[in-house]
Length: 95
Length: 318
Image (cartoon, rainbow over all chains, first blue to last red; front, side, top):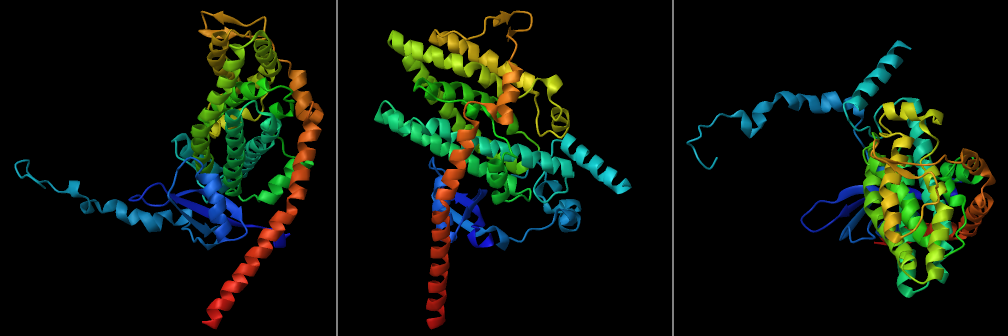
């Protein structure tokens, strides 16, 4: 079975220069070249993009939802990293 | 058991707060199963739905009509693929889903088990069948499962073209010769009731609906969606000078909606159980296309392997 199994690829499309590639979905293909060709037909039938990235799904390492606390919580109490934390008098301009 | 209950409660609170569930998040097993069933059924409907329309590609009445129909059928294939990939994020494989479709374990929308004997049906399908699908899919853009919701956003954008091109086909016929108008009316007669059945059983007979609503997989009941569709569609038929084949259909001022006649639920369940006019043809054709395409899939893999080896040799030589 596995012999006839096309790999799963994640597809990222850049809609225009100046914008980042954005994840749009996934598809199956025999190899990366074919994944690009398939992505063109599946995800850009209406001029949605000017550039495509494909990545084998099993090559993506993702953080686990269980790690959300240790990974992201520490930044929650660092309000001083945001500009609005600082009181600057209204009279001071351009800041 | 104690922890299990609290996990489910936490999940419910999370969904209640209008948060989206993503593939790696914890979810109740039944939520996962419901979604796999619903999304794969939705994907199968898009794929099987290509058949009644493909029937007319070679006989489209003009090159313009043919290009439009080709583009629409290609969209349906695309929609099926977005949905299969959304279902795969839940841990089911594409092969498994296709095997379930072919064995009859998985269902698809029963509307596609009706035949398309006339060109007018290409119009009516776009107008009514895609119209009913949009009614359901717009709701699903806000479904609680992230990948499903995102697929729906893309599909809804494309679906609007399907409905409008369909209405245009029906309009041309309805404003044409008496014979053409007759074609349009007969097609409407064929598709009206099956289109209403697309929303599924009435609320008192839809056992899964309540849980799906609680999990915000669905946000409107079958009967609500059906009523909204009728209220939108009846004036569109009036504009064309066509008659909805329902003697009980009439505007109810008090409700601000159309009252309509009893749906033939025996027919609905009969078609779901496999006894519609085209159930066997649809699956037979799917199996045939799948098997006849096997060599293409194998050849593509063999070519990919050969290319990979070639690349490897080149790098080791350098």
